Length: 348
Image (cartoon, rainbow, N blue to C red; front, top):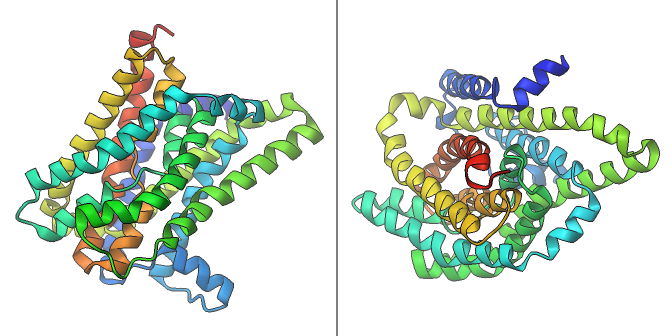
């Protein structure tokens, strides 16, 4: 069992499981015709549980599934971090400057350029793509950094900083790039930060603190293999849910997916390569370079979907939902790229 899990973590089996998860998700989406249902924002589904108004429907269940999958992914990565490493990560000015520059001075405008080049005659898809590029990711980049053997504590700190900055800047960028969003409540950003980052962050820190205090560091080190497995299972589960959301659409109108996939893939590969190489040229070690590159590349699809649903028409919302279907497989390919270029570029 242990040997199987080690192969699973070393990407020997993971690509197979990723492909299977995508196929299962598409099959589920096709079987139930899930695209025919109105999308429920995950935050609204969570609120309905606390208000006692939750109804067991396919849209609500999938919305909860996204939250559960992301928690399964992020919580183990947080729990594996040593507290002293978080303190060291705070003292990384060069890393912070690189991420802030590429996330806020480059990424939104680069996505706008790609939207103008590829989707000029498709206004709804154009708006969806620009919307997707507005904010940096506040959750999954921790997992991609973790999978690439990068500096996870640094990734957590970078995500926290990005969470604060994007709450202030999203309205500004939305007005500049998309016009005024009258129906959008900026507190949706804050709620997403709490839901996708805050809860797994607190749970992970408490797990490590109580576990080490009660059983010791050596016991927790042995637990790490199973925590990593939970994180990967969460990734696969999230893929199933996301591809189920629009699985029937992928089969019925693949050209629609391709229209979004080409500019988005160019965005992720270009951003990652430029930031990764810049970090290398500036003398960062591999672990920091991986954390910085993923933190500058991943996009906050949760926020993009929330804004699209509340402030735009269904086609724009559909474009943002397709985003993570493209982003997650591409980012996994970048994880593979980072791990296989570590010895070439960084001699580590």
